[in-house]
Length: 303
Ligand code: C5P
Image (cartoon, rainbow, N blue to C red; front, side, top):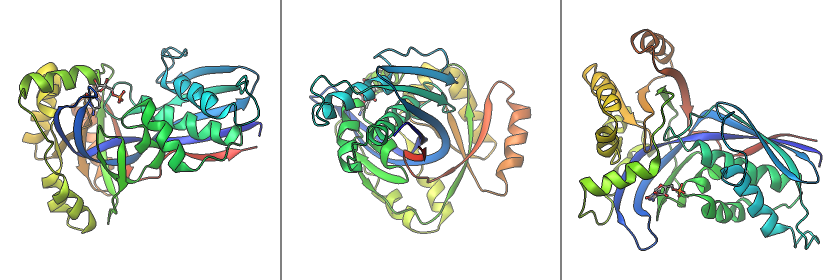
């Protein structure tokens, strides 16, 4: 194969319940992921060496092995190079990531690129690994990379990497308020520990999982919850003020992952007008309308 293009969605957490730190250094999570149609594109061309180019929102990001897409490519080489009859692991590719998912925004943009690279190179190098095998590799790259491979709605446990599908009865429309200044995930988790020194097991997301199966939007909005909201608020007073303003205005508001991206649950008909009003009232934010659930990383074009 000479060329492959893969599209990969951002994620939000409809519920993110956080417990204490486990022996592996990660927090125990009970979460419900939803993939939404804000997408990065990962392209790959056959080449002798591995290389990476970033464009769009991520144009300034490093392209060495600190970039999760490059980490994913190196992992694919290690895992499959020898099996392809190439003990020197000479598999190469010129990769290009075009980013639309906000950086350090709590929408798993870096994880999406890693998932996109796994799926792209699986196709380009004609490895033919099943999704279940890619998900295992994905877990080595980051807690929410397996979900970016799978997409739709899933229940996440462990550190977020153990996923099982959840059937969602309806589609959801979100108005997303993102901004230039990101919030590093580790800092938010660390501050969670400061606020919750005795955290043990995460709370259950069972009620929301049950509600997702029904078509009761009222119930659904009430059950949206994020345990990282308190630490994100403490670290970023501007995010706290934005959440408060939107809550007082009567919206169903949710912090996305570790933030600082903020989500408003809307409906398809009302969302464009709501977005327009918010662009006027909050000129410092980028306002986007997104829908979910959508499919995870997949090939859209190959030749
Ligand atoms: O797994 P991933 O590399 O994406 O996680 C990024 C950071 O987020 C971790 O280094 C850790 O600080 C924090 N994290 C955590 N508990 C989790 C997931 C992430 O503390 N379950």
